[in-house]
Image (cartoon, rainbow, N blue to C red):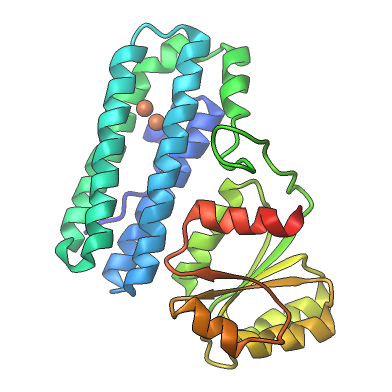
Length: 279
Ligand SMILES: [Fe+2]
Ligand SMILES: [Fe+2]
């Protein structure tokens, strides 16, 4: 099972489209990493959820571009988008209902086929009609992945200066959280693989928000939060856990936790939590 690495042949030449496609291929790679490494279900679930969410966002951006360019093939292309969306959602639902029912090869083939074939087979067709139409490109590029108050309302949060530290001993979890944060427009991100490393980072540099795993080798999330509060009292700590949040909440009472997120995480859930803290 080979990874579907990004290749220059996939490049369309419209920066936001290529950037989206890179995110999608990266999510596909992360899915494959999780499968190959027999990752826990909550992790694969987090990656598949982010993939589903990003697919819808990307399709909406492309469709806004078609509208702005008056692309003649829009009707056909949009129908393919809806079909793919339905398919990926059904697939994700089936995984959620029974993770064991989904075979590794099936996930790999399905995602690679529809994603890469759609880029090469269909997305290249709108290139000629849209490239050079800077106004339409700028309008579609400006659509944010996450808006406060949901898709239909609200504005994109201003997260340009937000500093986020992520502490999790699982590199695949760090990867997916970083992908979600970057998609949400957060660029100042530090990833650390242990609580000790995270605390050492806080001594050196400030952070506004810390996402921290509940179970880590060197200490749990509550101990981490207590130490973090001594070093950086302004930092808000959000605990992530695959265990029952009620139990984690009880066990971390008094540790100054600002929020709890259950794994598998979703991009919307994670960014909403962030928005509620920074508003
Ligand atoms: Fe696309
Ligand atoms: Fe497309």
